Image (cartoon, rainbow, N blue to C red; front, side):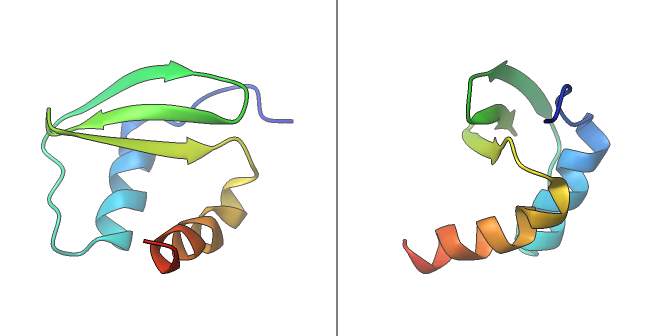
Length: 68
């Protein structure tokens, strides 16, 4: 079980690596709930990251994108 949220550089790396058109200028940790951590990106978007092993995040994001 994970016991900490990601630091801002990890969040920036994941988001910019997954969405190449998006440049992350600002990141603010919004909070933690049972199944995810939420981050405000550039003051206008909220990204939720699941509380799973980070090796699985890429697959999780790809699954979410397929369901948009």
